[in-house]
Image 1 (tube, rainbow, N blue to C red):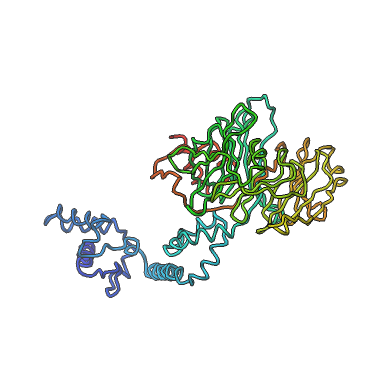
Image 2: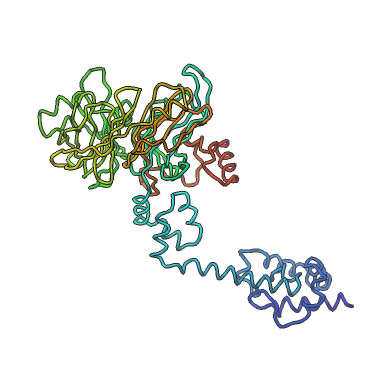
Length: 510
């Protein structure tokens, strides 16, 4: 009889007493004996009581109630099974938990959008991507075009350093290699992988030709050109550049297009024409000839501009600038990308071919680190008067040679100025040390990675999450990643192990 009364009571509760939120509030039968029964025993008792009447219809009604898609159309709200089998204390805790979660959900969008903007716009790209999952308002803000542009402008421009294990040029052994940003603002310097390979050797080498607005232009051993955004893992092939020598990758501001200035490698010692490729366009590269503002510039240009992978140009005042090379002597070449013409040859404070240009917060800078491999000094000039071409020496840095020789027996050093403040990275061979000294010549830090060769490649990288139409949409299709992204798994680019394993399985199936 007790079971019968209990079963009848529960049946009446199901049909009449469940309020819309699925919690019983005014009947006392659940507070005493309900905790001694499970929901399965309750379901069996109902089946025994109603089986003579219409067991099939009742079973169908229960199945409809348990189906998520049909529960919305049901007359009665589906009960919370855990609460039906719980005691009152558990139910009170569950209520408090729901209220707390509701308060947290309601509190997230209540942050003033102006304050939220100022916080999110300063985050690194990886952290900003995580913040998009907080709520819809955060995602809407963090994906807007104006916010992404502002976020890109505030990101630091960091030097790129490549790392790979020391192996013989003739060896077929493969190893890991990576290209990473090297942030000297922190101690120890922050390293963040940008590109990574898991099949690197001298036969499968790579070359970075240009870096612009968070985009990298590179070639692999197959001589194909790729453009990619490491922050978003997007990439595409540029077949129109095959067989060319890249002079610059730049943004054409009137059209908003990214373009590549290059010339074609021929067997002659002179260059007849330059070409412009629009990234993402199906049209062939345009030939612009030898556009100069003065005929006296043509003898320099027919010998070719220094390639961008050796001496990256600097965009300043809307024009591209190349440093002095073996053909330009004491000249800085200026190219106007709007009119697509070489418009000027500026004087240079040095004729050294290895001198490199820098963007020093809107001021053109030029550095020189020595005429041979035994480097003792580094110099950094800045262009005080752009129109008149007047330079001034900002830093003359005496490198800490005695301290470095007390640490390593190497006799050859390679130095690179990597900041507007006169920071210098010096590397040597056997063993592969890398030293960091400041503008006063003080040895700030030293680095040694076991069997790993570092190399300052001369390019700077500035993260960007801005979307570009020339990257193809995958639409959920699993596409095998290119070589320069596959090694990111081995250098732990992602901290979430499950995501790493999931991507690895997808790559195996591809």
